Amino acid sequence: MREILIIGNGISGMMCAIRCAEHGLHVRLVAPGPSEQSQSVMAAGGINAVTEDHEDGDAIDCHVEDTLKGGAYIAGRNSVYGLCSHAEEIIQYLEKIGTVFTINEKGRPAFRAFGGQSHKRTYYCGSSTGKQIVSALTMECRRFEGQGLITRVQRQHFYSALIEDGICYGAILYDEKSRTLIPVYADALVMATGGQNCLYGKTTGSGRCDGYAVGKLFMQGAVLKNLEFIQYHPTTLETPQKRMLVSEAVRGEGGRLFYFDGEKKVYFMEDKFGPRGNLMTRDVISREIISTGKDVFLDISFMDKKLIDSKIPEVRDLCEKYRGIDISKMPIPVAPSVHFFMGGLAVHKDHESSFKNLYGIGECASMYHGANRLGGNSLLAACYSGMVAADSIYGKNLSEKHPDFTGFISTEQKNLKKRLNSYSSFAAMHIRDMLADTMREHMSIVRSEESLKQGIEDVSYLLSVVDRINYDPSVSAYANYSLKGILTLGKAALTCAQARKESRGAHYRTDYPQSQKEYETATLISYENGNYKVSLDMEHVYEN
Ligand SMILES: Cc1cc2nc3c(=O)[nH]c(=O)nc-3n(C[C@H](O)[C@H](O)[C@H](O)COP(=O)(O)OP(=O)(O)OC[C@H]3O[C@@H](n4cnc5c(N)ncnc54)[C@H](O)[C@@H]3O)c2cc1C
Image (cartoon, rainbow, N blue to C red; front, top):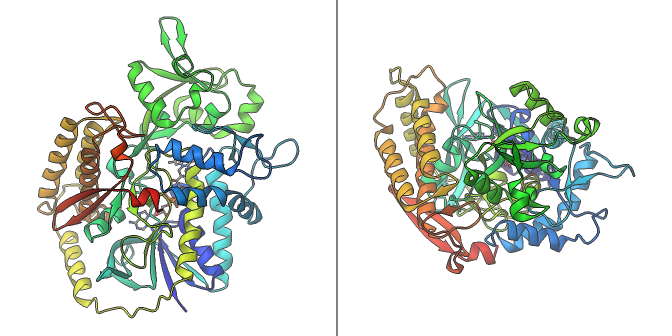
């Protein structure tokens, strides 16, 4: 039986595993923890689809156009069409396997407004959409596990890929229990490792999605794409541990942004953009908030308390629990924070990467969101990309005999041993913190040549010392060995941002404030012997 190795058990990884199992392929689904701890469970607001119940005037073409426009016209056009035209089928499938969507008075799944969309088309499960989808997919994975088609493995991490002559033959995994490396050969390797949160430290997302896997693959020769596009969510709440997301659902339900000018409330988004100002795309709102130079608030207190309880209970709870704010009486203090990474592994339409038999799906791959993602499109993309990759794998003749990797495996083992046997009290986390400080300072919502150059210099310095430092071995080995991959990814992101000499979507440069036609391209970056090579590419926009 053909063996498929999937790294990451969030929504995209599980969706791919289930579809592979439906095709009769055997899947090994690997992650550090259970699916219930993947970032996917945090998704609150909803998932986009145009279904037969659509709002008057809405159509698949409108969803496609909104997605391309929101992404500033550099998303893979054919793929976006595929995404939007399969959305109804995905909602039906999720319902069939047990996802409990909120229903309207007619007993049909309800949908709400989300930012940057011409129509209401975001389906939701209260404010725990991700949790509901993860539960349903987990049950389905268990069912296939019972049939011997899926094996779920936990407490293992991706270490490196087994690649030779442009073909991938599986991966080396780090096993937490034995603290050793385990080679796993597979007919296809699917990366579903989520976003790159550790580049910025405190984000709305999960620290488990740190970007190491993508950084390591880059060092092994995989091409990455559009790393400069990093989405700041405009409405997040400061807490001691992290920035908590105040879902776009609040604005979808009528929430209004304002700041105080003395006693007077200034509804700056509505003043500038009209009645739909609070639902502009996230990049626009984040920049507007920053440019006010004021403390900004989100007000939903005028909403009926019963509606708050039924439509946005998790937002109500998080404001109460972390900041003691009763949102039915008080406005919520909000500020933009890093939320989503539009860039990642460069993949073709079928989600195969620049290496044969190596696939990238979900947030770790770059395909559907161009320069800025629309809320509700990421859960859809996670589901859809998992299906597309599984169908492509199934349709292929994957019987390559793997070459001898003994030498490579033993070198990787020696490298790890060296790291685990060094003695020092220096915490690897200090380096991660320094990287996050640099990224926040030099590659923020607004960038310039000067800031990016400084960022590259800072990260280059960290890279020059990272292998010479002994780290505290009592802390997680993963935190220690993952440093170089994460730093390399950070430098690649800064390099992409420096190469794009224009402003587009989430990438705004004070020295090049306008969009330029010549940059209606994807940014591709590759790595060879420590050198970073950037190219602007049309194919990933027009052919994909
Ligand atoms: C607070 C919040 C709210 C959101 N709300 C919405 C929403 O309403 N609608 C929407 O469309 N999108 C939303 N998103 C975005 C969306 O949730 C994610 O983009 C999507 O769930 C990503 O799914 P995924 O399968 O790609 O990755 P994830 O669910 O992030 O899963 C990644 C998996 O990879 C594993 N992993 C990571 N690194 C390694 C490694 N080195 N080795 C082994 N395993 C590894 C992780 O442990 C995890 O299992 C939200 C995001 C956040 C943070």
